Length: 510
Image 1 (spheres, rainbow, N blue to C red):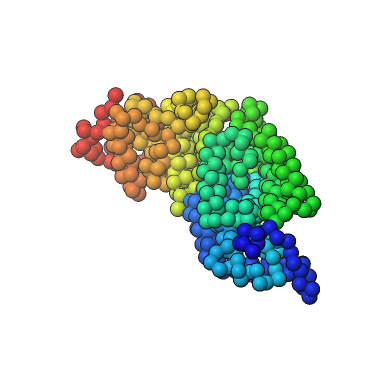
Image 2: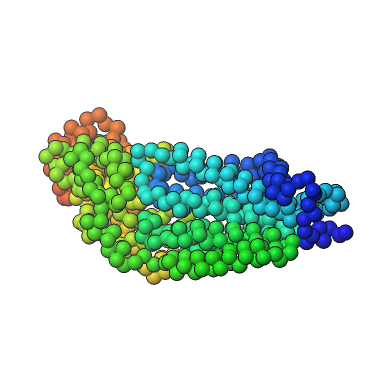
């Protein structure tokens, strides 16, 4: 009997062992082997380490985390696919065909055992990894909407990949099919970052806007589609041993449900943000507001847990403003925009409120929290000192936006403002929340000809932050310093600073 006929023969039952008992015993054996696989556990460690690294510097946002964790789970899925393929083709290597022919267990039973063992073990490992990561991010400041269907997609992907590995091992035995499948699926998934309804047919819908709810995601339908693929791949693996009614029903059912669910998911997945949705996010009524230490903070639904983080950034800036000028502190409103690491475009709509001050859909965590604090503190400082900032700059030539319009609340104060004393005070105020240069990035975007003047102001502001009497001097001369006609040179003696000898080389701009 050739090794090839080994795969198409039917079970020859031993009289003392039932089919179910034999399959269960084999499944336990294969599961134990897989639990010792360095391939699977290596992928688990890599996935967990990668996700911790990618999320370490960001405050938790469940709506993004569930998508990105599913994307990361593809590493375990790839390992599960290759492990399943290796386990399935094991009996074709070396002298295994001759050895297995002497046993009462035939290929169909071994395939059934693998269809049970590999998905269960690989999925369990993925659930463990993703659960550890998500649980580690639970905090009082976790924001966003947790989509259980999106979180379930990762483990389902791993199970589907394992079943695909068994099917490939039966129909295309060899060492090439599994790596080629992994590469093809990974490449298509990576290409789907740019969007397209076809992305609904992939293991994970990577493309998304911020906030995620801007574009409806068919997460539940997508899971149904993946489960249908699992039935299809399992049926195909068993069909290699002959077409029986149960196997034909499994293949037909899986194919029918996969086709219908996939079509529904593709129809539901849109590339463009609905205009009605953008209008809702641009209106003040679309936010939830809360007063904290006398300052009003407004966040989009689900993001109010970040308000205390924003308050931490704004509080030292407000404390450094003279009490009689604190009515200038604007309300802090969240803006849509800025991209996640796993999606390719961003869309913003011009808000209908007056002040530009406000954070975006990201906020720093751990080591990056200081940068976010400084960024928001710098914006508050610019508003309080009345700097002539652009409301929003329209970007229309970005090829990634496909002709769409993007509005961003950042712009250069211009050469004239870089020579004003109030700009120096604004940098000092922003420096109360974090490093001066990081605070400046929220509103100072100098042109090439303005870089010298900006660098000069940064140096003076850093010196001013280090002066213990800076607050007293600024409060005492606040009106004079806020006058747009007061130059940096006139402000320096009021602030107790001496001119830098290199000013003549750096202050010119046009």
